[in-house]
Figure 1 (cartoon, helix red, strand yellow):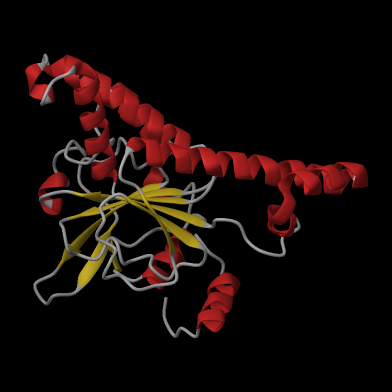
Figure 2 (cartoon, one colour):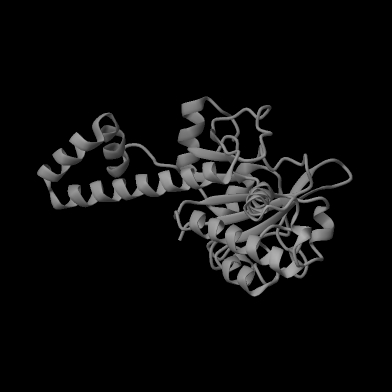
Length: 275
């Protein structure tokens, strides 16, 4: 199962730029604040739920084609490969090279940010119902219709089986540590959220110390409902420290999103000293 990691913080603490040089990473840019972030990442601008769902659908279809080509190769089915080549035309070589491991497929998906995705869901539901704000509905009704739609989108994205970073912006990161995740999109304490959160590999909060240095914190208070066994099941039984310097390579030492060989090759390819 691919890792899925949630990272949340106040605005302006470095969430968006953390993975800017991660190998073969794609940002789903819902927040539209990546203009000043330089890096090797690719970017898909998302301004509506239609855009979001189209991206997910395209990846689902591409992965299906890649898997089909892998089967044809393993079977030695030359006729099937010729048929695929005629249908895929100019795209065939890329699909074939991914299927044979010559070039990597999407290695990391960064959703920036989950709270923007939730806002799009709210907007969609208000439009459908002909209302200006969910406050016009009974609280439980409004919460229910948006939650169901939002969680379906998150589940579908996680089912792509690609490592996913889910960035969340909240007003006060420290206070969220004491709210059982209620201020963090989809990390609520309801039963539906608990079912989904079991699939989340781990959760990190970014905060800044008085000296200006920033860290990823691993043990938010009252968060046992979405952190199981302190990540041990997923991160090679390493016991994580409570704080990790806000640095992609430092984070990767613990999460193993990439191998050292992958990172070294990416640095060489892009003439980078640090990622």
